[in-house]
Image (cartoon, rainbow, N blue to C red; front, side, top):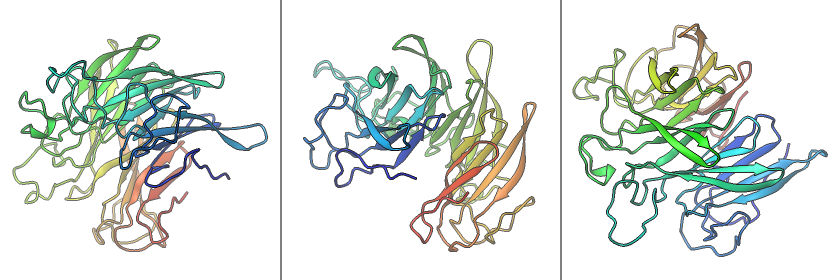
Length: 390
């Protein structure tokens, strides 16, 4: 076990809000999305911090032959960033790292005459790609969405394929329904979208597709979490504030329909032309309000096992259970649903709740991670200030 600390510790950096581990277990990236150094260079000056600025930083650690961990790099974006380090994803070899900066300007303003929209505007967001050669990291690309708008928050989630040649990122606040340059002023504000990019040549990324939920509504936050399979043939997208019912319909007042923030996970399959189509939509077995099904997603290496967190799920008791589900009870306990894939279909195989923890707002399922045989689950509000049972 090791304790990792940043090279410039200080107040309100939120170091450790997000952590990514390379598949070989020898490289770890830690996000500090509210780090406030003005530096725009890798391993640059970490001392010139600006009050409550939220530029963000990522710290890369590696383990040596003696088992001792050390900081290898302090990553910042040359293009500037806002909440840089909010999301992280490694390629299989650990030499490509995608970093989300959802509060950054998507496209930099070349002059004062530019208007919002078309990638401009605070919070349009971007994803920055870093490459490592030997032990040296460099910025390969800063990717933004051409049609991005202020407050789209592209980069709120990010996932990258094993070969590092395909990535998908959520723009959770993307609004639809008009052409306003500000996403938050759209009739369908915060409905969300996921964008898929491929690398055509080193450092050159091309947008392949924009995905959105088949039934779109305000405050859906589609793309809150996104996960590509290793070979990029499947894409899993969480929308924990989805208000549709079990049949995928949006029926008037979601409060009255008891579907408010029930949540959903959308599974997309890649076709021969490289684009994705919706293959499956998953909802909690008992659709009801305030479950947040899909707030976290983890897949096994071959994507045959899928774990989905619902960290506001209310359950009756605190034991591991098989089907059928328990009756609703204490609010905010949380639950994790495990699905297995058979051919192209997905079947619910288990529902898991914690044991020996408090009875209200523990948020079990806030994060999930698994390899197909071991499942780790975090619950942010447990009485011991957060636990991660195995």
